[in-house]
Length: 234
Image (cartoon, rainbow, N blue to C red):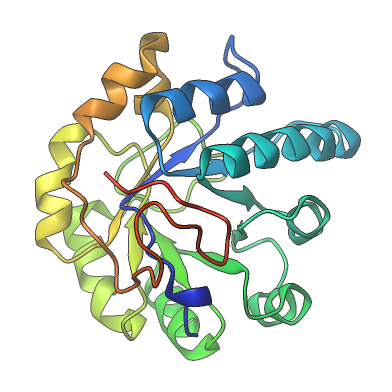
């Protein structure tokens, strides 16, 4: 799948999280203020109407700030809110069906936990990226797949057929160098960003020096691209 408008995907995906003192909207504000360039709205426990209303606010905040916003789990919410994209887990909508509904210009990511998933992602021809892992045990994910560790993730990367991969699963700042060394495009982070309410400080610890994926921007750093984002990456 060719990326929409050859958009550059930042190396850090910042996920919102259930169960925090801050609402998902206020988490988004804090992440934007910290300089995050890609936010994924991840709401696992909300009623559909609350999810939709929250997503509308989050997408609007991200659009105003020039931040990529993707929705976890729901093509319907992504379409209804005009989000930049959607990330689908293995129990969510079929990737090909999702792409047919989304069209070619919306980001679509999928979760990869094993070799079969990796081969399926590569063969699908519809994904822009994958989230791969888990690197280690995490409390933010129910029904967690078997932990892969760094070596397990490294073994799956060649099976992806060139799809860029963001490592998931309790990633910490100390993991960045080895993750980058195995050829991953970036990391997706939740708990470590929100820890202690020190979002800006925690985000600085995840500085990756603008590691890019295979995607790039046709527009300059201060010009809007097809997804309406303008913010430069880390």
